Amino acid sequence: MPTVKDIIVKKPSEEEVSKCKSWPIWECEPSVFDWSYTQTETCLLLEGRVTVSDGTDSVSFGPGDLVVFPTGLDCTWQVTEAVKKHYNFS
Image 1 (cartoon, one colour):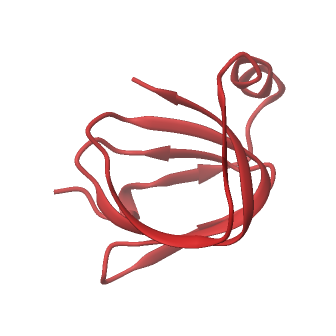
Image 2: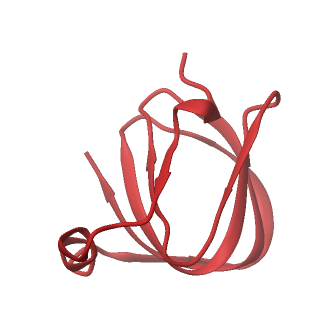
């Protein structure tokens, strides 16, 4: 079972940013919710701050970060600043 340690957070290349711009946008106000990944999600944060926890560890990310969530991850999202992101499931 994947953990938050398996989440990839990085600064994207220009090519990656260009690709992400064609993806849909998701927005969320500050909140806390549980989420289970049935597919791999890749997202590019445009705005906001998020901390994702699996009950043991946590990872935080914000504007400009490219984040990859593994299939099978069960986690809790804590949105501390309203989020706007491009996303893609694969």
